[in-house]
Image (tube, rainbow, N blue to C red; front, side, top):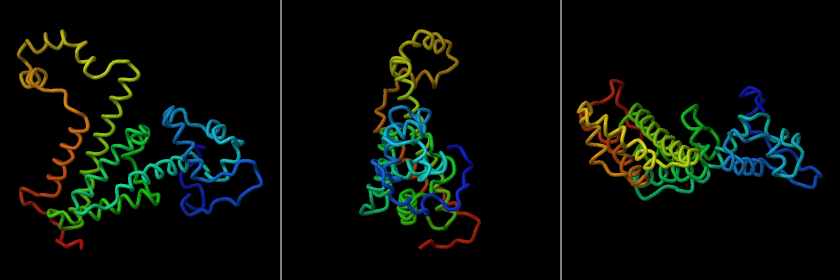
Length: 252
C-alpha cells in the first residue's frame, strides 16, 4: 500500500464508496479505518498491515483495495476519524474557551491514539473533520484581540500548532519510553541521582542545580494547560505593539 500519494484520480474524500457486494462481511471506509485504528492503538503504525486489517474484518486482503488505494489514504482516513473525536469539542461561548476545548481534546485524542502524534506536523490534514477542526480553530483566533491581519492569523496558528505538536510528542515519547524500559521519568532521574549530584557539585551548572533541587515534579495535564494559556496570551496579545509590515486588513 505504498504507491505514490495522489496516484488515485480523486482524493479518497471525493471518491464514492464501492457498490455493495454480495459478500458475508459488508465493508466501508469507516469500518476499515476503525479496524486500522484499533490495530495501531495496540501495535503502533509499525504493526499496521493490510493483512492484519483484513483479518480483523474477516475479509480477504484484496477487498480493501476497493476502498483505499495506498497506505497514505488509509492513514488519511484514520487521522480524520480521530479529528472527528476532536471536533466534538465544538464552539464554546467565547474564542479562548473554544481554543482551550479543542486543544485539550486534541491532547486527549493523542494520548488515546499515540500514533496520531506521529502524524502531526507534516503537511496539513485535509479530511472533512480535520478541516472542520481547522475552521473552528482559525475562526476562534480571528476573535482574539491581537489578531488584526491575515498575517497575524497565520503566525498565531503556526505558533499554536508548534506548541501542540511539540508538547504532545514529548508526552507520548515519555509514555512510550516508560513502557519500553519499565522505568518512569522519576525513577530514571533517581537512578542518575549520584552522577547528577557529582556534576552539580562542581558549581558549573547553578541554574540546572536550582531546577533539580528546588523544582517539583509537575503534573502533566496541569503543565500542558498552563503552557497552553501562556502561548495563547503571547500570540494574541502583541505586548510589544509590533505589527506586520504588510497592509493592515481586518479579517472579519
